[in-house]
Amino acid sequence: MLCYRCNGTVDPSRDTCSKCGTDVRVYKKIVYASNRYYNEGLVKAQARDLTGARDSLRKSLYLYKKNTNARNLLGLVEYAMGESAEALKEWVLSKNLSTSRNANVADRFINSMKRNMRELDSEGHGIRKYNQALNYARNGAKDLAMIQLKKVVSVHSNMTKAYELLALLYIDDGKIEQAKKVIAQCLQVDRGNASALHFMKELENMSDRNSSRSVGVVGETDREQLIIPVRFRDYGSYLSNALYIVLGLIIGIAIAWYVMVPGKVEKEMVGVSDEARSYEQVISDLQGEIAALQLSNVNESEESSIEESSMEQSSEEESRESESSAAAKIEETFPAGIVQTDQWTISQDAVNRAVSAYGVPDYTSVYEAFFEVNPGMLSSVNAEHYKNLIIIVLDEGVKQNAVAQAEEYQSAGENSDAGRLYDAIAMAHRNDPELRMKAAACYEAAGDQETAANRYWQVYNLFPESEYTKTCSEKYMELTGKDHIPGVPEGTDTEALTAPLNAEALEQAIVEEG
Amino acid sequence: MIDFEEELKKFKPSLEIDDTENAILSDNVNDMVDLMIEIMNEYRDR
Image 1 (cartoon, rainbow over the protein chains, first blue to last red):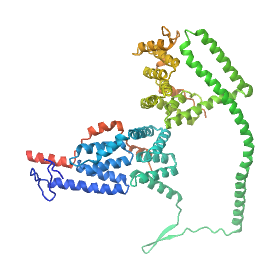
Image 2: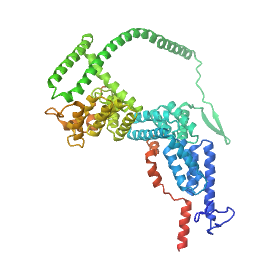
Image 3: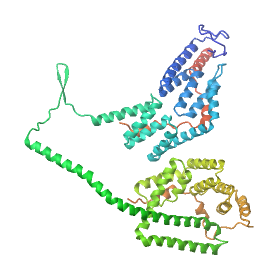
Image 4: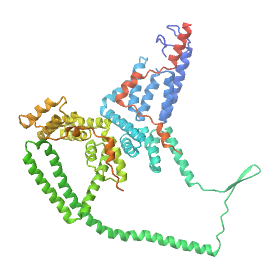
């Protein structure tokens, strides 16, 4: 023990410091109490009661913040509970507050974290996802929160907070068995987790209440309580027996009906579904053709509208012809009603893809699928998902995460994927010229000069007041070999094209269909 | 019975790795020893 005044060594058997003479009686008591809590925390940590250990170690540090052992152990417990940032904080504080001249084990922990930066990034990512899920839960987007948390616990199996929140969401959703499973997983990591134990107890009480039966009346005789069985009515009469037989026959017939009839129906349905499957194959092939033609039209029309106007017109006519021939093929085979159902199917599928992609996360697919949705053709369930997707695609935090993912693609040399992702983000954040500039740079690095030139052209014409105008003009002319950069067609409303998307306006477009 | 909203209020966001530096710098909690020193100094000043 070191003196709090002069840092000299204090003899445990003396009440004053041998160096400066300070009275250390109270100080010693505080340090001993701190050590007692440390010992308690150590025993609990060894028994995997991490919550109990954390509480004891925090008490130890409230008494004596320079208790290096307690702080190092607290960091370790936080790390075991998936709180890497808290663990790192405790070890750094331990290193700085330590008064001991011996080597501090916190150095080893910090160096170990520095050596495994990839793992640290992954844990940081998991914490961010947990915080996002908590936000969703608070905002009522429970489905999205559950998707996020399932992803977190599958990758970070020791993050107890994520288990607790996921269990709560399951319980609120009525999924009791899944909640119990998650709680059991949490208790495997942290045996003394208060929330998990509380939830488990409540679930057990609920199941006890559901399965309990009345055992009868409690009576009292001479200070003793007796449980008297409930008297059952006597069904000895012939009429009652006959009634039971008839009931049994009815139940038997019903069981036979439900077992045998579905088999027959299924056989008939197999033939019908085979035919439907072949028709669906034809439809999806033709839809692929239409989608490819539409995509090439969107990319080409922006740039070539002035200089190649005649060529564009002819290409548009050709594509219109091939589109109409593709649509005609569908209409020859099927009535027009089924073509409209495809739009419906595409919208439902797009919403589901966006939600699934967000769980990965695959931000390119999230943004692209979002803009494939026709908000006027959504089921009531998918309309709710779409509203949550609006929050996601317009969210600045999600944008930053998506940009970070694009930067990872770039670092890995996947410039095409990076460019595509920047394009996807720019669809939602239309007023940010930097995204299109980054997309252009990525396409250029990937060797796709045509697309890169198109993006420079977009920034030049849509953001004439930006700092990128000169660069865009030079880059465009360099990539295309032209001596000037064309403007937009007359009458084009550039402000509307770059106005930020409005969440309310997007929601108003939703029309629920059944 | 479990009240979802009440239980949800107990959940706090986790500290993120990027915010560790600020958390360390703002961690200036006094312990019992600091309190003891403060009391002794006050007593001495009187």
